[in-house]
Image (tube, rainbow, N blue to C red; front, side, top):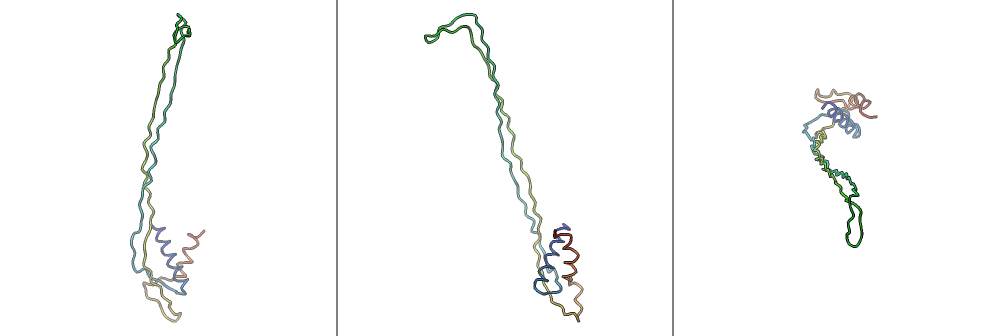
Length: 129
């Protein structure tokens, strides 16, 4: 949460400085965190293995042709199902109401006013890369 607050202060300072203001106040805020989910698909994997053998014990006449012995075999089919996952995604955010002020150098700002240049100088080096 501290990083969000730093971004809010930095953006407020940038807004004030861009409008030739010297100070700002945070008049109010509201949580703007967004929550969503990513669902991965269900997958199925099927493998087949087979085995066959021939035994030459006798001859058979099938459909006009002669075949030696007995043919036998087996097959094994295995299907594995991996059910999808539900992954929560949280994107933190904050809506803030900012009031900006241009205080002349010969006047003292109110105690609740925040120095825009001071905030920018202290936070920008950490957040802007």
